[in-house]
Length: 238
Image 1 (cartoon, helix red, strand yellow):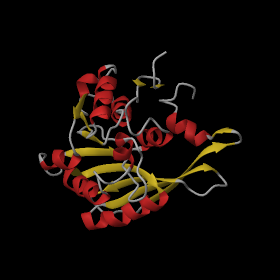
Image 2 (tube, rainbow, N blue to C red):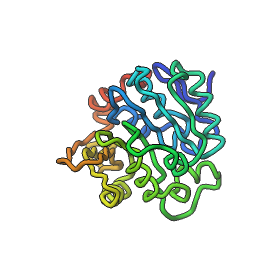
Image 3 (cartoon, one colour):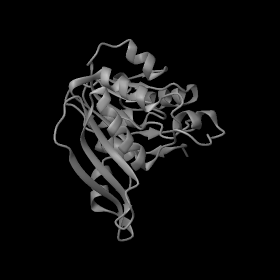
Image 4 (cartoon, rainbow, N blue to C red):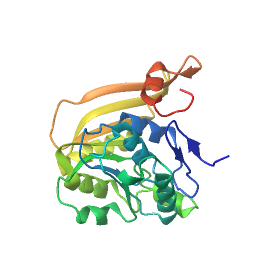
């Protein structure tokens, strides 16, 4: 049996990736705003999940996708997943830092950005270096991430991210210094009675009235109707 996770239209082997396939990633990949045409950028692609989900959702040669990954093991895994997918011709892997890649690109050249970013700013790091890189902000601080997004994002583009609530609120506040504004935010709760655990965040280059949403994952012993509706195009058993 193949290792990793099989979705409806592609397979992801996340062996060797610091951040394995997770519900966070699937929610973000399904929720993110994607354009009808224009370049899509996946920052810190890891196993390649978000790039592959973006390819499935747009299904057009008018949406070239670049997946950036600094870790060698994860980059190799992502490239194999892209090669084995139906969208190899549309997805390009950039094995480098987003800071370096962004410095080589024209301002405002990316129509949409998706990113499941590192979020631990301090504390004990994972013993596995690839996991530490994926989870901690040492190699990609939120300041550097926002600076790259601000430079790359088209005037009408959207950058979609997922973070724990506290880190997400900090990022939304910090974004303003980079002329980025929260356009849409979704509080994610595992159950109705629990406090929100994650924020799905959409940033744009122009200020607008913020849309507030809420998503509950589990209801009545199973997945909620809203979660099923969001993810059913990807999960095999939805």
